Image (cartoon, rainbow, N blue to C red):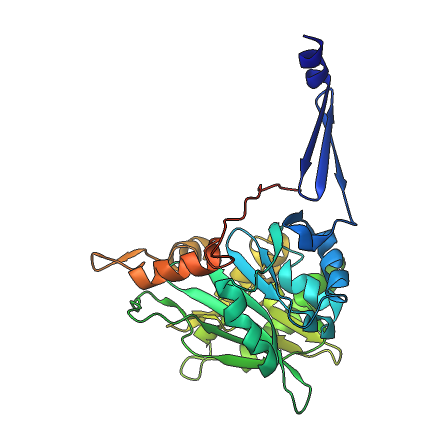
Length: 339
């Protein structure tokens, strides 16, 4: 009886690197910064990426680590130390999203993913990212040119033998795009703590850059469909004050209204700034139309009565997003803890 009463008053639970102590219904969370990552799996949050970054300094050239979120897989080699830490952190967990890292795993040398990636280190690759979409898997990796020592970000998609190509207007770009790693800050981070006037000036300059650089040749009032995913964190401001669009993984097969860019960047970010920019450029509010027709989250799973999720795609899902690819010998058990 006393033990049951004690459990109601005081409860101690250890979840990976997090210790949760509950006293009279109030939860207190403590993170163990010194936990050895190589002993198993750990639940991490954004602040503890520094633990991984420090741990990479002592890792061997043959070590690979895997980080998993709900729909993204990262594979990391110690050459990530060549990146600026702020970039490394934001690449894995962008500031504007509360991306939850479920666990970090030291890959078993006998696992499928280890064997697939360790050889690529010799080609200069050192950080790989896989994103599970609707009927394809997006693949990006960061590499260093062995001659020039310049760092590049490459993106493509994981090919399937019998991949069904959708007629839907939103498509993943079926090509490899290579762009040079540039030091800078995303527009979203840059204006985060700015005043309303400073935000207005920065976004206005960004829109001028968009409407001139990506203007549609046939219709100057529209922009290229390459700007489908034009949220603020996909634009970089470099040290010389120049803007750069950095995410071409998704595109629209049609040209886009200029008002779409303002909607996608600002409607859910700053409604007051959104309305001011529409007025500034003499454009109408069409957010309902864009939500219903251009959402990247509404791609169909069935086309012409056929399931787009092919057998080949399901095999890739198991390989990259289940324990099957991490180790063929055992399944790794972990708890999804939101920190």
